[in-house]
Length: 317
Image (tube, rainbow, N blue to C red):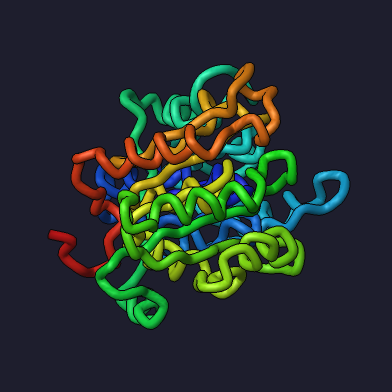
């Protein structure tokens, strides 16, 4: 069976779509899957079982990015084309079946909208894939058994970023001798590029003992590392969704975006909202005390970690 899966270009949406792929792999374990996605999301699928290839879709003016994709795909008779971009592309290549996401942005969690594309209910949880080699690569970065608090202070928009001094205050409260993670090591993670480095710099300066994980990790290695976190705290971002997908205890911080649409989804994941109308409130209206209380609630969650994204070829039990 040949499947063409047109994924989103943004990291967070790509992570949320992985539950659909896991469903397809469970239903069709013999399937060979081709992924089409933007360069930022490529690593989300790099370790996916049965991935035949990934086609990088680079945005061009006037929709010209569709032409090379069409040229790559038109010569194959696809058993299923899944188009999460809601385009007409699925109808321009030979296919026995097509599933095209409809509706655009609308109320309700994004995960539910994605699941509707394949008629799934309940919506499958996102997963993360990494390899034994990825685990080995990040092993030197992991702290002693005292635990690991991972902070993600960046976001696609500065309005979505909680102030660095509040991240630092939260980290100090969590790792204090009387805190819920006494003595835990702290890591600061962010994506590649100078913009991410600049956004993370104030928190790294406020926590001079923190491990600098900014821009150092490809997505599969980041997933392997996040899966070992004792707690992840981050703004509404792709890394937040990736952490939740690994099964790590995850707290997402929300203010000017809608948690009802993009809260992290995982076995131990929650969102905490700034005080005010959902999706319209500045991040400065999220007090440290409220974030600390929410972090304690996440740490108290008892459901076991998700193993769906364990290293390929290994037994997660």
